[in-house]
Image (cartoon, rainbow, N blue to C red; front, side, top):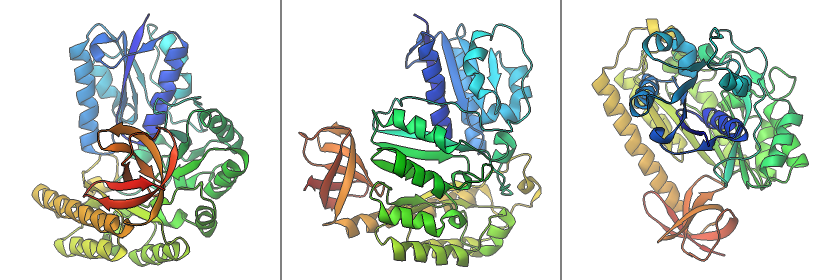
Length: 423
């Protein structure tokens, strides 16, 4: 039997697309294996959102060629779209797939021994790549949107993913009806998830309402969203239906207005703060996390300090922190740089420590409260999973089953995990 292995870098959309590639190959009679050395076919699903992501993509390609030079090598994704000429010249790759023709993956695999030109154009319509199951049997990602029209000055993604495109409601529903047979939770994922429907006269709240009305999936979670996309209807859907996860990951990037303006972010710190206050007024138990970029072009020490104070005042559940890295093809490539690499590292360290403190404070505030936990794994401590608010929870009862939603009470915590007892 022919074998394949997949390595996936980057976002939830990439994770979804890798599931599609896996399903296509399995249907063709391939068996998935873990190690490159055991593979007849290796797929590297790349990312290029940061310089580090690009480095890791190249590193995985090197590893694949070194560990199994006789295997067929397929490289797909955003790094291919932005660097296809380099990959073609420097590496002996059997098949390159960028942003277009992912829905033709099976045909391209069948014909990869025949030379064909690389498709440099972006797809104009959403390329439907449906899946019927997910290797993670607890939750499944569902790609409902692709592309981005925002053009933040630091971001290369609009140049590697193209314009905003959405999967029609009926196709999303059809996929979820397959997935709900094995999965209790789905995560609605996209490159710019909050802009779902911008090209098909719809919106994210419409989609969620259809899912709630037409499927039996037990939990619906959203991937990252911008503050101006959390409209009143979405807030009410989360507030009024227990199937909606009580967690929003809302990208901030900076708490300083001058930095936000140069980033081309579509809000001010005041707009962000006011909207967060409204969300919490409507949904007091909601968890809100965020992304922050430190060391952007005009981020002086004072502006960074402003961001730190803003984050403290908002009281996020946790932070994802990234040092700014200049990306070619973006506006920020031509901006002067204020912060040194060492200053960026220090700022990452400061915000990472702050994130740990924010999570500790949140965990302590949850002791004695009731949560519903989707169980995923077990060890000597008990059964592990995530709450609706995306908190890591260990239920101290090894007899409980996996892949179930269990109601419990938080009893204590450490710095990383909440501990609970079943109610």
